[in-house]
Image (cartoon, rainbow, N blue to C red; front, side, top):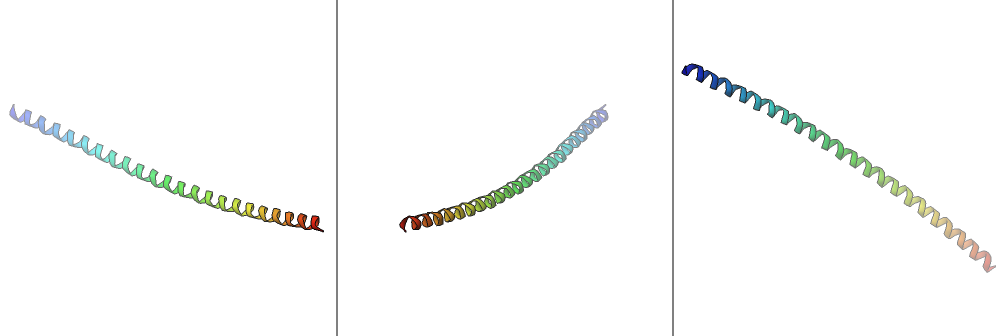
Length: 83
């Protein structure tokens, strides 16, 4: 009778360890997936920020060109009025 109880206890412990091991593996897989997601999101955010910076630089350059053209036109108009 004692051997049966002892065998049942050992079997229960083995099942418990197996369940914990499976849970640990699942947790490790989940952590790896989360880390990959964070890395991908970080790279995507960096790409978006780079594209935004490029767009801002392009728009600023166009604005500077427009201002320079307007200044040239205003100077030409003022010169025409002065004559």
